Length: 282
Image (tube, rainbow, N blue to C red; front, side, top):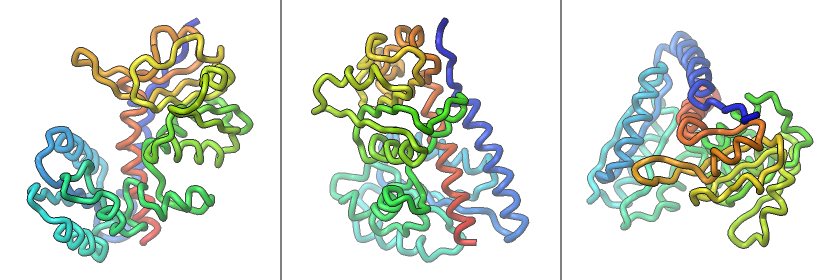
């Protein structure tokens, strides 16, 4: 029997509805909408699309968006000055700097100036450190979305053997910490792992976030596993994941498609982060 598809679009829509209700309640209590400031430097085409999608999602869910579109010639100092102003702006509850930045800007330096309380993406060192320590924090959106997708299957994370393939700061590391926070036993594999198939074959939960098309075949997956494919690869104008979907769906019990799985959850969890930040500042 083929795996049950984990419908990221449906789950994201449910989360957005919850966010909208919380945002409307906030508006009723405070007389203003929760606010997200989005900063886009330069004219990167893909970044422009991402920013537009985020702004549209805000507008559809009772969150005020403040778009700051800056020319590529903007200096690092000018961008940091804007971030400081937004940190002090009481109408702004979350700040998002769209990446990548132009080559003359130091990404880590720029992001470090965002207030940790307004870190909509959950990327800052302070929030990453709080996640590691188990303290309340704004966490990276995609990993938070992955946890929601796994929970939607009804499978318990508590006590499960989870394998994460990929160790990026954006997905691999934080999802490993979130899985441990939910009491999974976690193994992290990466480009220097010898024979990672020896680990993936024993995973009750397999999260793949490498960016390599078709990396995971059916014989690498435990029968009955929950498989989360974070990969976003383009081939012949189409998106595909890191998992050989048609093969693996015949082995796994639950699987995310690409597109339509993890992707829609990222913006939904961004909105959830913004609301969380606003309530903490209320």
